[in-house]
Length: 153
Image 1 (spheres, rainbow, N blue to C red):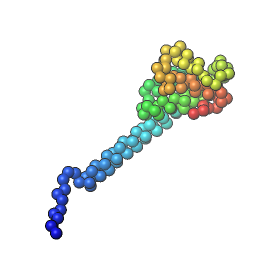
Image 2 (cartoon, rainbow, N blue to C red):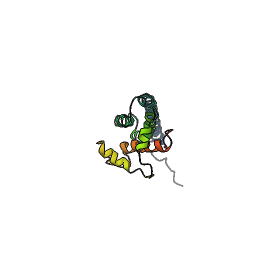
Image 3 (cartoon, rainbow, N blue to C red):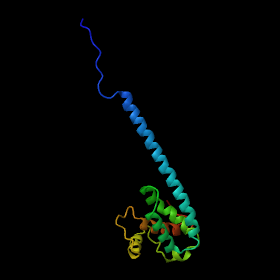
Image 4 (spheres, rainbow, N blue to C red):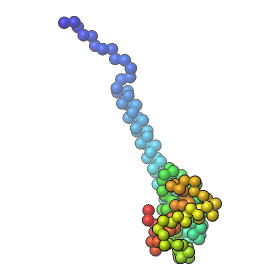
């Protein structure tokens, strides 16, 4: 029987590949956690600011403040887009919005009027699915439909 010589290993060893993957996974985890903490702190500061601001501005002032916040949001984009109703609610809860609620036509649940409002205020929606202005007006609609107690998220 001929003698078999051990094969010559070539290329990267498995332990180096797995080690590299582990280091990459740890680095991505640390970066993700840092972004999560930054987003959490940003939202906490913003809600406190909007709670105070809501006491001093009318409903249009809330919309302006929320759109300014959205434009400069320090969290990642999906969190900022989805955070508009929550931030808007914090502003709206600052004072009574009965005059605004009485001026709305709440007979239709579709709230398509929001896009017209955005056009009129000079902030048209280029993408209707991720339009911060439309989300802000929808939050007002929901706020009024729920007796000024909050917004359906």
